[in-house]
Image (cartoon, rainbow, N blue to C red):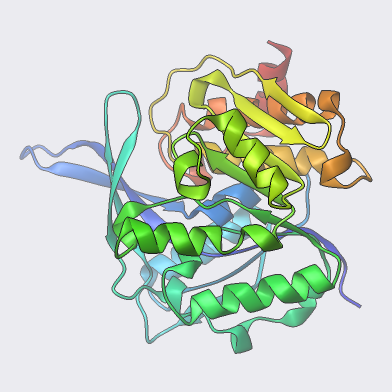
Length: 320
């Protein structure tokens, strides 16, 4: 019998090429940073000692090798990370603004991540995890779209809590309408959901974060968090909506901020033997504060996985 995993995530694993100054000839330099929202989340949760596992596909190439090695160093189980010689590892080129916000250009036509098939997924991993997490980028194309739905059904039927972070990337969708339809299609199947304040109107009929939370709770989601950048996060369940205040930091690169927030939140949630809808207001504030501390440290460095802070740093920020 497989030892139960705390958090298993399915989705994209890719390289973020992040600006790193200019060469002597004045040409822009890019830093090879391992990333992908589900992997960022697992890396954050692993810092808390959580047992994590990744399901996905990369190329059998130099980038895929680098990503697999990175996950192993981060303490993430890679038994179901497929390396496929037929497809190239997805690449993202990131442009950073002065405030650390990003714009993306993707090399993914198709990328290895969208070619994950259900027959390549070990159902035992899905049947033996406490939380199963997905994003929406695996929904852009088949076969990964079908695999995502089928994997959710297996995990859900096995008693896992289903976690969802849409993580909208306009450049990877044919049009906003398709993105909206597919991102919303997962809502009936999830227990916990994290969105940014920029995604509220895509996932709900409302732009206001509180109204968006109330709407998603009415749709059957048991706990919803809306991240507000440096202002922290709003979190709600059947016990009401609370605000977890943020931490001040000097943002260099916001890549992975939301992922690391949710990784910290889920890792904290798993300390409690309770369901998402029964978390108290105090617990939601406490876990949100932990997530905010992780995110506030993450944005002070470039990259996704490589920017995840150590536990000592997180504890120090929480004390401050």
